[in-house]
Image (cartoon, rainbow, N blue to C red):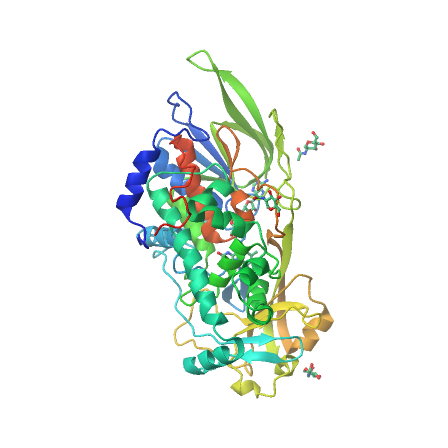
Length: 526
Ligand SMILES: Cc1cc2nc3c(=O)[nH]c(=O)nc-3n(C[C@H](O)[C@H](O)[C@H](O)COP(=O)(O)OP(=O)(O)OC[C@H]3O[C@@H](n4cnc5c(N)ncnc54)[C@H](O)[C@@H]3O)c2cc1C
Ligand SMILES: *[C@@H]1O[C@H](CO)[C@@H](O)[C@H](O)[C@H]1NC(C)=O
Ligand SMILES: *[C@@H]1O[C@H](CO)[C@@H](O)[C@H](O)[C@H]1NC(C)=O
Ligand SMILES: *[C@@H]1O[C@H](CO)[C@@H](O)[C@H](O)[C@H]1NC(C)=O
């Protein structure tokens, strides 16, 4: 694990100083080990939770993962012409250490094939693939489109790009890298905390531990406000930052500064994806954790009491669900909700809780439509006069203009790169992915493509619709031993954030004292 600027000694020292401070959930008595745990949602958050909880409680505890749809959730692929393509979460940052760790761990074990779900139940297949690894790299080329023409096209020459950027935006570009890097540096502290078993009862406390008051301010103001305050120019925000927030979060620079920084980090070099599809990590974690997959939709969670040996009453949870064979219910000591509790995403009734837990928290999720088209691009749509056979641009980002109803247009590589595969020009028929907030009409498609032979559309409720300043984020802890992972998405939604949230949960179940106050009073302290 990288120790970026943070010395273990310092952490231990401060850690010792903090021991004894009562955390949010520290109960004086030693709790009985849980016998049964329910996890609701088989996306990266839920499956990572299964993995960490197995590590935490050992082989005896029974872990059940409820999944109403497909394992992977917002990590999903679609088959087009015999190849699979990512339709949801696609890239992973090189410093996303949990995702890296999962790959390392899962890479060492034989894994079941992609039709894991089928295998899990029928056990008819026994096709075992080798472990997981990152996907091979294919070079890419970026351009920015204003709805009429390309305002920027990356050159194959690095130095040409640097000179153009300096010419147009002065030092803004370099300063942006430094700004994002400094935020990432603080972000990395979370791995140290987690390694030492610390966990946080709210998103705000987690953010505060990483970056002090600076991070709390960042998450409660827009990216635009944050960057203007840092001296970046409005032109730079409009021309360079906006296209990045549009492709990564389908929204403008009015998203919060923290998720904005994550979006900008998502334009770094060295991004990677999982060979065979990112969702393979989810099925891998599930398999590795020996959790049982329950293909059912959870409809309600209610709190029940049973008398305990010590005389005081202990609570447990009844989970109601509807599967193929109808409605049923089961009881658990710990329940982990690993799906957003928002309109249109999950409808879970909580009963018997005081104060009550809402079915939907306030705030909504933003719709991003992913349209995958196998066809021939009309390069004139991009206002370029380049010949299609010379047009190698693989990612077109867009400005926030009325004229561009699309958020991005990119040429997709399959999740498994075939031998001898390379970047091909626009004169060849290939798979393009368009992100937009509204579904594309037939007319839209006719403008963008000369011809096509297949269109696949997926309407995601993709990530929160961010509009700082914000009210309080939803809690991680809904009730004693009832946890909510997706609260973290209100700081930022990403695979790694769900994994961090899953790891955070384990400290909570252990009742270790929370590291809840500033370790570095200035939030800096390298
Ligand atoms: C188009 C798009 C692009 C993205 N790009 C990136 C990217 O490049 N990099 C990145 O890091 N992140 C990206 N993200 C974000 C990332 O995909 C998500 O943050 C992450 O996958 C969330 O995982 P999760 O497990 O927390 O939630 P989910 O993946 O949503 O998992 C929740 C699961 O719970 C299930 N469920 C819901 N309700 C119930 C119920 N009542 N009972 C049983 N099961 C239920 C759902 O079917 C779902 O499978 C992107 C997302 C989208 C949509
Ligand atoms: C949730 O509770 C409300 C009111 O108690 C009820 O009307 C609704 O049908 C319940 N929904 C589910 C999915 O159980
Ligand atoms: C390609 O796009 C240009 C510009 O939008 C348009 O004028 C032209 O008609 C399109 N070509 C075809 C064959 O649709
Ligand atoms: C966010 O800022 C608003 C005012 O801009 C303030 O009222 C609110 O308390 C802040 N929220 C948090 C969580 O700091």
